[in-house]
Image (cartoon, rainbow, N blue to C red; front, side):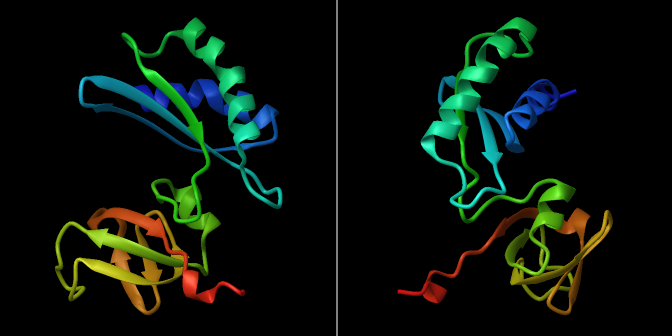
Length: 154
């Protein structure tokens, strides 16, 4: 089991008990340092703010120290997934059905391009449909939501 999976297992119940949703856990090395990024979300209007991040950070830091799922030192951060968010898990895709997304593919194959953008119409464990194009999940290297700033009302 990966470090991120172990951390996800430990912190998810705590985050949910605080009425937030765990969006993602990323554990990666940047330069010489290791970083553990916990991304949280909410259904509340206004989204996640700095106070929410601090509340979750304080609630999980001692629990992580107690369970010690990470060898050595690391930097812990808690943040919002933002407007344009990475899509990595089935629940991410389900949450953004009928929204605009962008996917990057490992190769063009039969899709004509290695980057596709459109409305996510359907998502299953094997494939997704963007507009009228069916794409195998195994062909996707990265996916994210798209926020159209031009559609903002001023």
